[in-house]
Amino acid sequence: MRKFNLIVTTLRGQENLAAIELEDLLRSLGDESPQVSLTSVAGLITARTNLDPFEVINKVREIIKEEPWRIGNLMRLIPIEEVVESNLEEISQVVEKLSSKIPEDATFRITIEKRHTSLSSSEIIEMAAKKVNRKVNLKNPDWIILIEVVGAFTGISVIKPDQILSIAKLQKIR
Image (cartoon, rainbow, N blue to C red; front, side):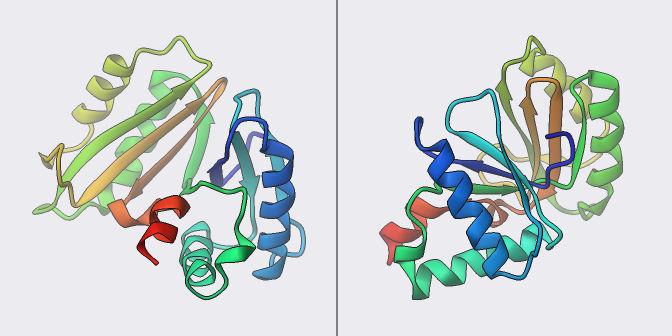
């Protein structure tokens, strides 16, 4: 799927169940026509929702607190702000645009997740870092520039660390 705004992980072999669960979940949150797609990567699905993906994550966080049994096959939900073709020039342009929301006194880290690509992580990081004039903090950044390469397409977000939802971690906290 070219225009996704959520990446969701699940256990290998559970992709179909996770896709059904995600579609039902998005519908229950108010999206009448979510598009959920399997990818060529085991354990990874993408979705296009008409809802704000950041709000979806906040609402799923609440569901886990109040009705944890509703989430059984989803492991992580990752909001995606822009999707481009997997080439350094397009990735670079979007990183430059999205990173403008990082305050001047804030720190950042670049996180790369690569699947089914020959792009080099070091090349992506080097190119992206040149576009961001902020301090780097690899251990405890204020912001994360997340670059998710999934074959021919790359999802990019500039997010705070708590804007990725790890369902397993949240369920352990309960």
